[in-house]
Image (cartoon, rainbow, N blue to C red; front, side):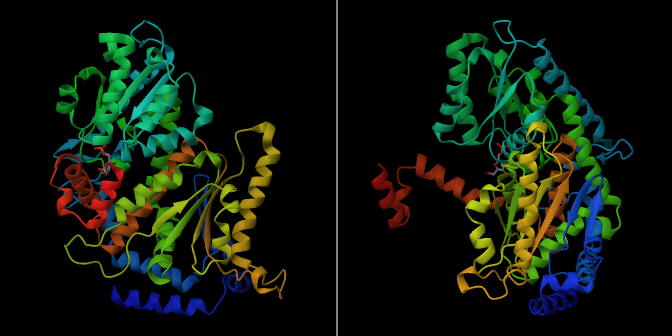
Length: 518
Ligand code: F6P
């Protein structure tokens, strides 16, 4: 492994002496060599400073990390989340009928299918009006109360798939800041609203506090019938019962599903209610298609593997510390926030699975905003700033608004122009610009392109990113599936809130701030 690592380090040094553009000049087929497609999704990574030998070395890195065996271990339910003693089986939530997944001698895909059927019956009942509110009238709105993995995925997917939403409008409340729940409920009629309390553990302070607020709001309007307006999603059915939720309205799942990987099952209930079970099934099919690509495709055609290798190259060898996610797709506006949890909570780790310090850099900083908005904000830094930020563009061939096709053409032109401009700079167009007008170019990007943002495509994209995070974590030898790094701040917040002496033990800064805020 260290030989490959050293070789790639040298290659990154060599790459500094050449331009990405020169790689195109040397190879007329570069676009086809450095791009791959699967089921309508195109990954172009030709606008990076990777040449064939570098790609071969990157593949060798994945091989040296035993990626095929690590991948098989995840898909087949081995206990790869070693610190928590759990399997990692979100892929079983979009089950492949030809691949049973045995855990403790039982095929868990049978239970997954039953759970999807339970969700579909509930979602369909709400949508067609056979499951009614306490006054016997249909529901029009659903509020998902959850945070992190119990919020970001469903909220992102509902925004992404808004053209498919019918009958019931989804809303999301996550922040403990009362402004969030107050502003959301203010626009809603409690008589017409179903509240889903989504929490894997059912212990999360934000979710339980917001749930109390929403239950009080329901009770005030509908009285003791408020239970007809509640449902829950959790692995902790004892806690949902203690909270008073009708067990028939509880959608359970197992602890082999990580929170940030959970929207394919019951955590996606709000999505299924909003877009309907058929579209939800297409969303799962998209993810399954990417699972199959990840499991079966040759390395050169394996989209998650290639995306991860590009990420490793930029992060570990070129020293680029962040990646910008730039969807030229307004409805993917929450994708960067979703990927921040998926990537940074999974791979922001300093310790290997064996408990040793990680040798190099782990998870990069993930951030971004949709284009073209970002162009009028932070692209200045992408083009002329002193740090290089690899950009990741997403673009559809077509939008969902046939009457606005001309706007989509402008959107596409901007997306194509930005990746070209980042790479080419002013080298060709204006060879002698004044310094402030000079663009050095040579800034890498990748582009993900698809026909249209459908449920299937969204499923492909999310599974692609999940597997990319897995591959990068596997190469670093870390456990991508725990998140102990979130605990210390939570513990201290509890102390500040509940222990009158806690502040006295804290720094003068925290005490001074607390005094000011009193
Ligand atoms: O604090 C982090 C975290 O545990 C995330 O990993 C998780 O997605 C989120 O909180 C919410 O947890 P839960 O679904 O148990 O309420």
